[in-house]
Length: 290
Image (cartoon, rainbow, N blue to C red; front, side, top):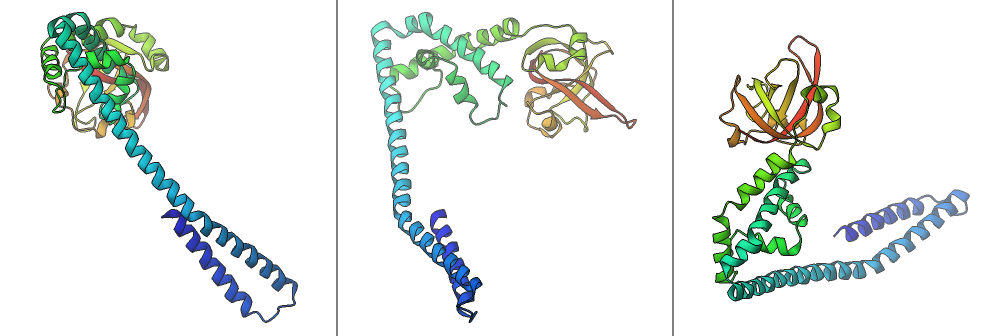
């Protein structure tokens, strides 16, 4: 343990200093008396630390046990909620619950799922948990589309039927066409920082997508004109755009292709040109294209 290691290090220092003092042969000197005083203080500190180790160890063990109990309690609460939900489904009927509550909750979850890409990369392990925090507890349950081995049969049936509706696609359309906005490309060029974190919808003609940009990022001209060039990638950090290689959904993109894009503004991106100069352009985290 770290506590034990700290005590061991101090004990070693104490032994080393004691040996030095014993060999000095100048017990009456002021230097000796000063060292003797420091050694005594150090020895006292070692004993104090030793006496604290058992209580620290007990505290750590207690905390670990408490966390295990808390996780078990949360898991049981989750299963209890599923049982309550199953009772509601049996009482009202799966189809009625889906039409009255499930579709709207699923649609909201889809919207929040896409909005989260403004602040978290899609491969962030905490991504889904962060999305769930944007929903109220009822929406989390009503939007369930994944089946679980420990769920009641009616809950799994509900999840399966809800997944077959268009609720997720409809929520995505809410995001693409209601949440994302179109802006003047010259305004983007003038002040990219103003649009940082905002979802922008527009068109771009791909100008460069090669070994230098990497397979998951590209540069293109907004609205197809040559006056505003922009950087597109699939992460929030522009310095990682060229190093990302896992992006199957951009495989059909090639230089010269014009697309409609949906992406979050990342502010400015500066890079070196082949002529030895530098250029600064607006940058985006690409969420979707068509």
